[in-house]
View: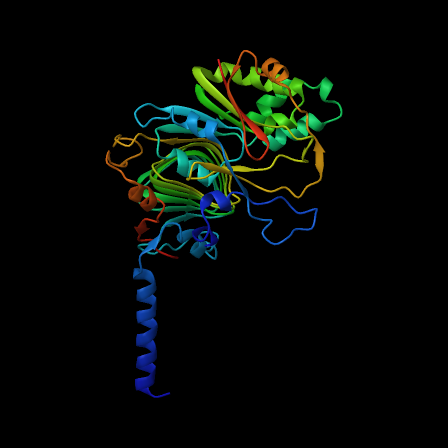
Length: 219
Length: 185
């Protein structure tokens, strides 16, 4: 099985179909250090259960990482669904809460009280209206000590579709390369982000070497 | 061909068959071997796992004392705590499953309680909650729901769990396959 050859975080990052010509080594993910993310993970414990929502797809690397803690992982695989819905022409007419409920779809009998929410790069692909609605939708599921983590791009152009992230065992994150055409970045300013994430406030923020800014929000 | 040659050939064939059936293999290997299984396991040998054929539709609770392979459709509850359950690529299950090891190659809507291990293969599509000390998700597997992993010292969680002094070595070992005897039809 090929999975025995490469580590799980690398297997998890299958690049999207190439629209641009790829060069040798382009398939390799970009490794980024993400200090705030791993600082947040220090709150995890093996004596107290933590509930973690990953808005992205389920990944073996995430399961491997969190298996060292007493944790309950919720994988909702909603990034692309929400992004596509936000692209719809008649989005003003739709009931956002219904859209979010369909996309996030907490499974029956789940009543999570989330301690961490991993949004990855989703905020860059949502309009401020959808981002605000997403935060409001998640609010009832949040515990008092919840932390929300997100990557916000600072560059004017970003990959046309959300790229994948995978937690690596060496305190880093592997980000898949994108060969898709680029789109304009919403370039959220701090005040705008604060509005979208209200009642959450920026707890910490740090610009990473890749130009991406990571944020941790808390109540 | 003389009698001696005939005897030799028969002897070789018999040994080959016995070797194949006696070899230890993981439950993870079992579904691949089962792909060519008949749709309905009408004649079940003594050690073969029970199979629910592709055209069978069961509504209700399934309990028993042997391994189970599902190629058909099951709605209800499946409880085989001491045994393994495999949902084949054509299998479709809407049930909560409690078993020793659970492998999903088909569709499942329900909760999975794997005393030892849960494996969702690349063709698997699961909507539900998983409770198990070890969870393997193959590339391409679809999963929506929750995965609960217990504290290191909680022995009651999903059956045996890692001990308090679990080390990184143990963490690596948990990735390895548990060898269990699985019979091939």
